[in-house]
Structures are given as structure tokens and as C-alpha cells.
Image 1 (cartoon, rainbow, N blue to C red):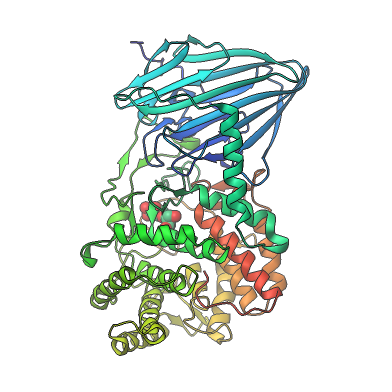
Image 2 (image 1 turned 180 degrees about the vertical axis):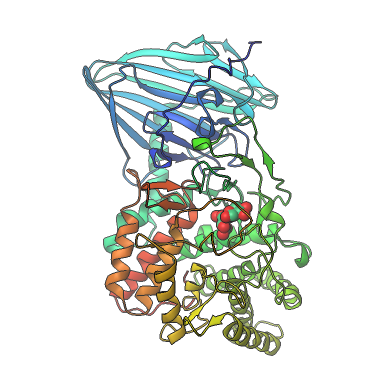
Amino acid sequence: MTDRPNPANPRRLPPDRRIEDYALIGDTQTAALVSTDGSIDWLCFPRFDSPACFAALLGTEDNGHWRIRPQDATATSTRQYRGDTLILETDWVTPTGSVRVIDFMPPRDAAPDVIRVVQGISGRVAMRSELRLRFDYGHIVPWVRQVDGQVVAIAGPDAVALRSDVHQYGKDFATYGDFEISPGDQAWFVLTWHASHEPLPRPANAMESLDQTESYWTEWIARSRDAGSSSEEVKRSLLTLKALTYSPSGGIVAAPTTSLPEDMGGERNWDYRFCWLRDATMTLAALIRSGYTEEASAWRDWLLRAIAGSPKDVQIMYGVTGERRLPELTADWLPGFGGSQPVRIGNAAADQLQLDVFGEVMDVLALARESEIGPSDDAWSVQQGLMNHLQGIWHEPDEGIWEVRGDRQHFTYSKVMTWVAFDRAARAVQRFGLSGPAKQWRATADEIHQQVCAQAYDPDRNTFTQAYGGKALDASVLLIPQVGFLPPTDARVVGTIEAVQRELAVDGFTRRYRTDHTDDGLSGDEGAFLICSFWLADSLALIGRVGEARALYDKLVALRNDVGLLAEEYDPATKRMLGNFPQAFSHLGLVNTAWHLNEHDKCTPLRPSSY
Ligand SMILES: OC[C@H]1O[C@H](O[C@H]2O[C@H](CO)[C@@H](O)[C@H](O)[C@H]2O)[C@H](O)[C@@H](O)[C@@H]1O
């Protein structure tokens, strides 16, 4: 094809489209988002951070999508995951009958596939598949042709083949398949990516792949500890966290999307398809607690490879196999979700100083050492290098946990987590007989402790503040008792929880900070931050207000969409999710709070540092 689609007449998506209208399918190397309308609007092939071949999520249908649904515009859909798997079932009801569309991505053997199977339930239903491939984040129209009965699309490094038992035809830069389905009928579609210079991979068998995919997820979830009354939502969150794991390397992405807005229509749009040490360590803590040691072990190996070299070059985030350069670009051809621009590719936060990651890494490695994963000499030698480096920089101001793009500050949470790093290092020497300057580390931990209590505590409001000498509040300091910095019985801890409830509350949830009190370098506002709301529930449980904690947990669980997924934030005013989706932070928060409440019910004390 030589012409391009007419940009003056773009194919629009429904204006009332919501982030929570999407469901996730994935193969633990990449993932796709499927809308309630049966359209795959986001898919990056072959990795989470590869350019998207379907980017309608951040634009219009002309930026690439693949819809399979009844031709009847009045058809309605409901959907669910098949049991405890990532196989999505969308059931359509039309005036003439009903059908089921089954969408999944088989855990990868060689080539990545998206498979869609349509099965008749009742009556007779006229269906349509509408495929619009656009490489490189929605702006390259590929050369599409039929080769041996299969549709092959090629542009630059990418090639995608569609194999199906439904006849395909091309029209207006899209590929269509029209078919009818009755009970007992079945139609299948297999979309496969390969590098354009390589031969077409062998086609996957749709039904065999379905069985294999079902077994993969069912066997994986069967290894989890039973979370009692929270079991249903914990399992779904664990499956989501597993789906965000890049299995070849053990890396874990913060979310599979870029630029879903934290402020609808605004500029708070970021690329999350990378491995943050912070998000990954917290995810690991949730997985270890839930019985998954294999993933934790793989991630420890990932970490050691990623940060290998000089400790002074350690970054706060990496690519899925440890890439260090993640330049932030603007995809100015994409209008953005709900008009939220810019759409960003890459993330400049990779170059920031965020001191908290030292504490998070030291803490999760301590947890790993104490768990079934056991010790690792390599890990300890890397940890010693990190501690030597931290000894020289812990007193510096930084960008903090929230990666502000305003001035660096002495953020309280950053300093608390440097205390965690020195505390865990000194403890490891004492407890496991490892080598290292334990006395010096303990002395530094004590110095940081005194400094935080003196400079980050506001006696007038009886609360820890966001930064030394400041007045602004920050929900991250809710973690002070969880990481063991102060006991939950300390009046300053109780005062901080109450101040957060008083000053950061929004409809019973909490913001991470107030954008009118903190200069984060950005315009606009944002919603309630879900992981912080889970931390608030944890804090309430820790100080004995368990009824309130459970009520908040239940309220957060009720925010999940129809298939149990959460974005990063929630706007109580519009009752809509905000931010990248689904977000590891929110799902690990759910898992940890469920375990905290469970442990509380069983009167098992929390191990310090459980996030
Ligand atoms: O809010 C501004 C920042 O937003 C992103 O960071 C957030 O997401 C990270 C990944 O989940 C998380 O680790 C961090 O704590 C959050 O603040 C974005 O990646 C940043 O570039 C941006 O400055």
C-alpha cells in the first residue's frame, strides 16, 4: 500500500472511553489491553517496551487496533477471566443469539502470539474481525499482502502474520473477516510477530495453545498461599503481578502502558514499561509473602546483573534486561488518552537520584536471605558496594519516591529508607556473620534516625512532614512503622496517620501529597493514590484501628474493574481510574494489605518492613 489513511477524517474511539474498560492478557514478555468493545487497543511486540503495533489506546483506531465483535451495533458484552488464568472471555448477547470470544497470549515458546477464538453459545450471530496494524506506536502503515492464505504485514524491523480459518479481505488500510457463528461452531485467529528479516514462524495451534495457557496459569496460581477471605482478589492481583514479569530476565515492569493520564487531559503522563528498583522490590516482597520464591530468586539475579559495575553508577530504574539508557521522547503524532498530552516514550526519571531505593533493595535482599531463597555471596558483595556508596551520599537532597521534577529536597521518606539500608546492613553482619563495618553502619543509622526525628517532625501538628523543615505532608511517611523506624505505639506515628487522614484525604482514600503544597514541577492535579491508600489501611491496622483498616481495604477492593484490575490512581469526583494500567504498585499494595489483615486476624505480629 502506498497511500496513507486520511488524518483529516480519523476513525474515532468512543469519547466516554474509560481506563477501567480494559482487561489484560499477556505472555510474561509483553501484554495487550482488550476493551469491553472487543478491541485490542494496546500491544507492544515483542517486549513490554517495544514499539506498539496497536496504539489506539493513546489515539484513534487509525493508530492500530484489532476488534472482534458482533456486527450488530446493539450487542452487549460481559466478561471474565477463565478461572484463575489470564484467558479473557467476552460474552456477547445480540437479538439473534450469543457468542463467546476467548482472548489470550500463550506463554512464549518461540514467537509471540495473540490468539482469539470465537465460539457460538446460542442462535446465530454475524461477527466481524477488523484488524488495523500500525507499527512504531501507531504511525507506520505496513505493507500488507496475502501469502499462502495468510495475511502478512511488514514495515521496517517488524512483521506480523494473521492466520485464521476465516477468509480475510483488505479494505481502507484494514483487514476484515466476516463470519457467522452458531452453537458448535468455532472460528480461530492467530496473530504472530516476527523480525521481518526472519522467516515466518510455524503457526501455533489455537486450541492446543489454549489448553497449555490454561494449565500454565492454573498451575502457577496453585502454588500461592491461601489468603483466606481475601483469596479471590489476592489471586487476581498475583496473576497480574506475574503478568508484569519479564520471564526471560526476571525483571518486573511497573505497568504495561505508557501515558495513561494521572490528570485527565493534562501532562502527567509517563512511560512505566521499565523495571524500577522500588516497584520491583515491593512486588517481590508481596510475591515472597504469597509463597513465590522462584520469581524472587530470578529477580535477585536480574538485580545483580543490572547494577553490576561501579555502585556509583547504580540507577533507580532499568530496561527489562537491564538497559540503562531510557531516553524520554514525545510521540507527538498520538493525541493521547482523553487528549492527555504529551505521550511519552522512555523515562527521564532514570537519571534521578532517589535515595529510598537503597533501603528498598537492602530490605528485600534481607527478606530473601531469611526466606527459603537463602543466602547469596554475590548479593552480599554487591550490597557492600552499595552501602559504601550510600555512606558518601545519604545526606544529599534527592528527587524522592515520587520522582518530582521540581527542586531536589531532603525528603523524609528517602532519609528513612537510608536508615533502613544501614539498619539491614548492620543486622545482616550480626545475624548471619557476614563481613562488613557493622559498627559504622549502626552509627550512621543512628545519626539518620536522630536527624529525621529532629528535622522532619512538626511538633505543632504532631506529624512527620514530606521534607526536612517543610509543612507539606506526604503519604509515604506512613511506612515509618512498617519499616521498623519507629514502633506503631509512638505518639508521632499515630499523629502522622491522623494528619494524613485529615490533610490528604479524598473521599476516604488518600493522595500521595497535595499538588498545591508540593512543587513537583508539573501543572494540574491528580487523584487518590491507590498504593498510599493501602498503606493507610496497613497503618490503621498497625495502631489497632482494624475495623477502619478493613473498611478501607474493602472500599479499595470495590474499585477494581469488572475483571479485578486497578490503575495507579482513582478520581473520586468522576469515579474513574487514572494513570497507567494495570499498575504493579496498586496490586502489590492490595496483596500486602490482605496479608496484613490476615496476620492481624490470626494475631501474628507483622515483620517490620512489609510495605
Ligand atoms: O509523578 C511523577 C512521576 O511519575 C512517575 O513515577 C511514578 O511511577 C513510578 C513507577 O510506578 C513510581 O516508582 C514512582 O514512585 C511514581 O512517582 C514517572 O515514572 C516519573 O517519571 C514522574 O516523574
